[in-house]
Length: 573
Image (cartoon, rainbow, N blue to C red; front, side, top):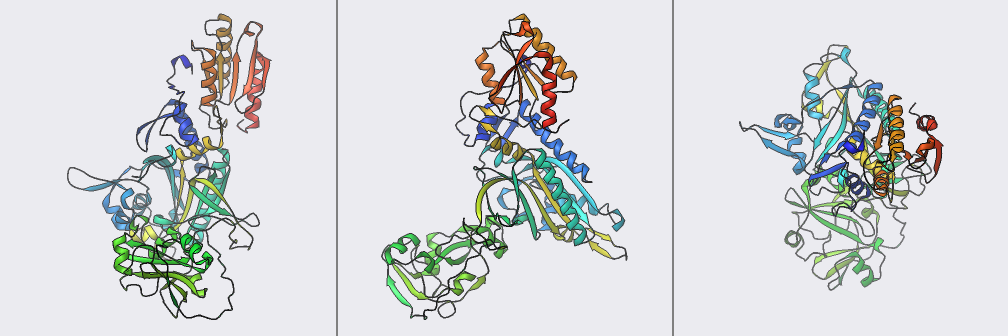
């Protein structure tokens, strides 16, 4: 492609709304433009990268025995009502009505739709196993779209679904997809971890996430260097050992704590360690109050809370002061489990039941209670683990200390079981002629999110540094002076020669200042660079790589061998 004919509106200034490097650089490099918040137009350079990511997904899915479909983004309400997710999915679902008042959604995912297709066509175990996929745009009405392609309202995803005769066969399909995803993200040159994930609204019991490691990632990963344990902070099991306490159980004591509303304030006021407090958090779930009690030195994991309650995250809200006063008789900051209104559902983290003589809110403004003990002074629903993991927690697998890191979720895999096949009555006849529900798996790769993750891992202060495998073009030939006949002639010769060998090449033949050309070249991040300048008459050019400061003057006739070497190194030839 000749850049004199190319649509590539690069920007010199960082767009005000862009916070992350990937968001800034994809806008500045002329690879995408915002239509409205969370919705983007992909321009020629950016769309070339997206198509390359899609193709890698396609090749590895095909190699794993999956077959490509393309389903509509428009899905009828009836499918989602059958699975129970029409309401459960919550306000993130785009809903619309046609002229006949029939309700639809723009698909945020496609479990129901794929299941409905298969149930009408696959009737026998002889047609199984089956693995099918599509690459398509998904729609989610994010409350706060942000960070460019990281959290948008419209995004491109590769989603796949497996249908098997039993759990054992489904687990084999799950491993096949795991291996395929390893190949996809390895080919994309992403540095990633596979971690246990929360199944959330998808359902099922087992889930893993593929996290591209990045300091700006929204996801938090807890992992152990001593074994293979790794999980998102939403999923990570917390080992919180309550120290053995041989002191006697003391008489409960009412303590005046004027305007002491937080754990930090209470810690200073009473000079008692936070681990001796019982922290109360008050929520409303479907309009009803729920109080959770956890150790005072820890944070509540809201995902574990909604999973225990069996509700969607959108149904959980922080209680207002009026609700708190109704169930406690006190102002906010003095809630505790003793004497709580029966209208409130009380959930107790299991570690609280093992602690002695703790301090809790007194359900009376400006008062707390000391020496409170579970069983004697209050009771509630005991929940095994409601805590959020923190750096230094004990690994639940091997007992060593865990570390924390951030990452970008670029892929996920779920063992769905029969959640969707049961609800949509999708059955087949087994070897004995008996009807059974399909045992399913679901597998997703965020295509556009992977593009952003690659930029987060591969950039510097001057722009993007695309890995060769996904770069919009492989080589950029920059003609320093487009009015110089020798330079243009040599640039054209190299351009045609490399294209004839199958390489994707940009020729910067624009009548622009050389500084502008070099800045654009750095910004868009083409991996292999050839500069045709004042030594063109001697058939000499400058050869360099985007991710290196080294520059070498070489005979123009050797450029094709140098390019081939880079492809061999990248394992693309």
